Amino acid sequence: MIVSLHVATGAAGGALAGTRLRALALGPVLHLAADLLPHHDIRSRKFEGWSGVVLVALLAATRGVTSPEAIGGLAASAPDLEHVLPLPRPGGRKLFPSHRVGGLHQEGGVPAWAQLAAAGILLVAVVSRPRNAKRYW
Image 1 (cartoon, rainbow, N blue to C red):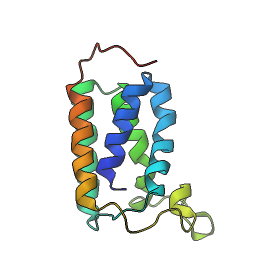
Image 2: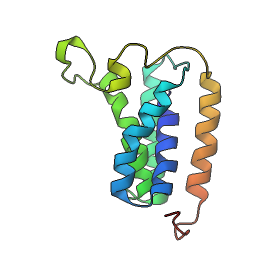
Image 3: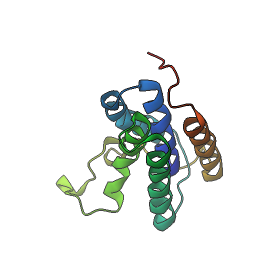
């Protein structure tokens, strides 16, 4: 999935999780689940990188830097940092399971424009939710 959707699903997951620790733990699980769906990626690493930075900054500014929403968004998008940072690659392979294991990250299916639309809808729902809204659990 594109970075914007990873941030958005992580933010929504963080809002539902209700705590920073649960949001942090849920982020990579949501990233893996999203990567398992066949999808089209955006080829521009510049767009991907900046959209992720801007959306995490938006969450931090509207929900708080240490909010479950901001931490969830960051945790769900963090695995994609290995695409741009010189992290270790044991055996020449990437670290995150859906990036490492062939067949888990497949091209096709959900187009990039639909992922951007879904990310926008999710983020509007998260940032417009009252800060004192009742937690779901």
